[in-house]
Length: 292
Ligand SMILES: [Zn+2]
Image (cartoon, rainbow, N blue to C red; front, side, top):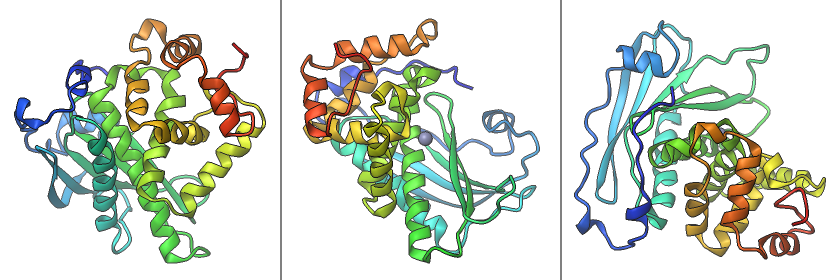
């Protein structure tokens, strides 16, 4: 699933100068969603795929295609208005990232899937299937909660899609770093940050509070995943560049897929006074488990 082209964005990123130096990248047409490549990517041979709609999205000098797909084998449709909301959320997520750094983007497909499990009420979640510098597929389970106001359901949905869309950005720009299992701490934390920046509503805020509560229990950043939205928000508030620099600086070799390697890379990346500053900003919150 994860094998693909190495793509380094570091050189381009060091030159804030614009697009003139870098020709527009034609990313091509979306792939056949009934083809073997697509089926392998989503681990589903049974898919009976149909394209519902598509639109072009221009991010800087890059143009990508967003598609809404439907699997005729699944009983899964988005509620009215949710397709537009998904496109909006992907767009916002990409724009927040692209505003701060020259990044690579590619096509995205949105695929509603059935909500499995015991609870078919109030289930909203997303999974991103990616292959390095190639089309990104966001599978979404969407069952709105009747006890929550429609606008809050919709806001939660947009937050989830914006989060997943940043996983796509991660995959196009830092696929090797992202491929390590030990990367969850920054993968999820930075994706929640972008979701929160895209939709700073109550859902995002509750995520922050949740992360905050975990931090209060003295977990280090390396022991959390989604809760790290707090850490990444702190980093972003110093400079958005630091968030992208941190991701780029993380281990990218499968031989070093361990939390010890993640911690060593984080130590090397952060200034020495970062743990103390972070602790001061967030009531003793910890970046590292040990105090060095
Ligand atoms: Zn995620």
